[in-house]
Image: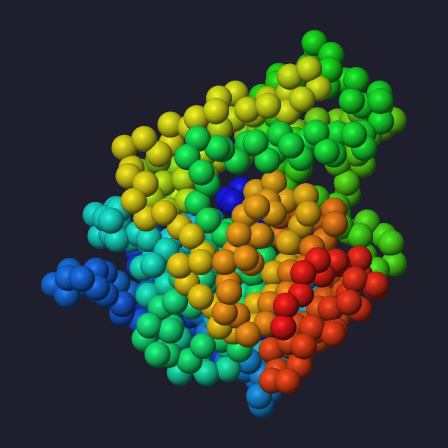
Length: 433
């Protein structure tokens, strides 16, 4: 789900001159960008007297006739996306030229940050984020658009689709989900179970000498078991990505750890700093902030993943220190999420990593199986991919977009996706017309 390592960026290459209201005091300077529009949304739709929120979002209209607009929904829940480098997004995703872009921070987050008293906990939910987004789509009169959600953004996209249907607003021509959430975690089953499993799988690829270092009483660099546990946890999120020419786009876990036995002193020092830096990264937003309030409220009420449990290395294994997290104590689990409560009628493309411990197959598979009425759906799996798999097929993204939009066109099927399997090592394990 959420990690400081993974960020959602926003594309900002399309010219736009729009109205600009003054940024709220204390917000970053980029919140005053001319690309940002404003819309007043109800703070509490059940209580008109509660007032409104000044909701900021970015909209870059398409620059070519007939091109759709991407509606980007970030992961988390919690982080915003306005401040990420736009050029990096465009290059990484190789988005087709001329396409529009709509992106937004959630209520209370990023450029929409407010005081803690302005949005009480009960007004944070995926449903309310979806309602905010639907009002923006209606305001911009979007009719030709694509929903693109990553990680928690897949849950947001699913709820948004339901709101669009309820309000009889235009539906997206295509829904793309990456690192998909299909349901809440079963009570008592933490995410660490999937990280422990992935370590067992990937540690088999380590050299005997490297694996032996993690079975010793004194761990490499004399760092403690929890420091190494945090680093390995974060590394497992990535997976291994290969381009169509066979080159490694992201280094594998064995490559990352091999300097322990074969590296130069400089390489070992660099690895040590990476491990120590990983341990310094916080696992949760600072207490007493709107970011933390939203994260805690949405996670605990809707998905309850038990994700804030430290891990450590013990006798060559990656294990959780506890089976239960106290993070959600005092917050009711009263909005349990299940994707099959919303039926998506538009074509759906799932992009998943077979080695993703954050949203493993039982999560994405639950979403796929629960969507019984989609006009077309394709489940694409990157065999050694982790979380955020799309960035791992960058050598094949043009082919991916071509196949995806062919799927969205009337009368087309999924014939373009087997090409991705042959050329890009992206496996369509299930295809339904």
